[in-house]
Image 1 (tube, each protein chain N blue to C red):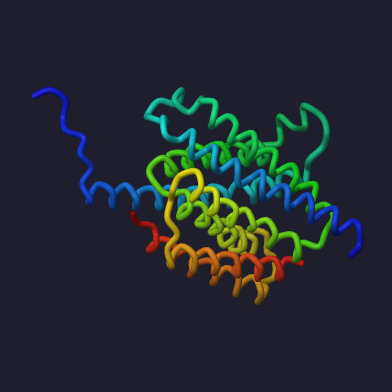
Image 2: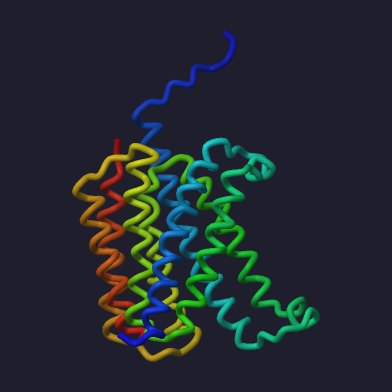
Length: 131
Length: 117
């Protein structure tokens, strides 16, 4: 009777931890998309109100940053800051890949080594958070 | 060292410290967050977002000085500060995976920076 018991089992903890990692993962995708939109928006940036209000890429970029922050906060509620925060570096991976494909930047060996190392680092971090 | 670069490095260093405190306050503010959007309006979250925005201003000013290959990796110093704060403020533990993972992420960011110059 009454309110349901709120005992958190180890399974709950694991599920919550997984969900917080997944949320930060989504954050990095939104964050990368935001950066690309901002980059496109800044290319036509001028200091006038009408120009700013019609600068759709810039507006979309800011909106994505907003969503990004909300997701990060929810993730931080359920997960460890020390494990989740470095995962945000995945943003570099998506930005680099998007710059290659959408902005047609030439591939660069240093960047490729860098993003591969970040992916491995994030994989290690994802297994490390516990307790 | 040339004064412009030193100036940029100080700005990016400041950005990394300010941003890491932004993360700390987002974590503090996240504790009371629920399903309703209004629960996201609390003092700690507002402070956290403000610190984040502040850090991005320092960062943008710093990067104007060029030398992305030096400055880019410095931004990731923020990951180290955040790891330290999470131990001090939230009593989170360090373990081998976290340290190795962080080390690899930092190394990766250094390489991305080298490729961006």
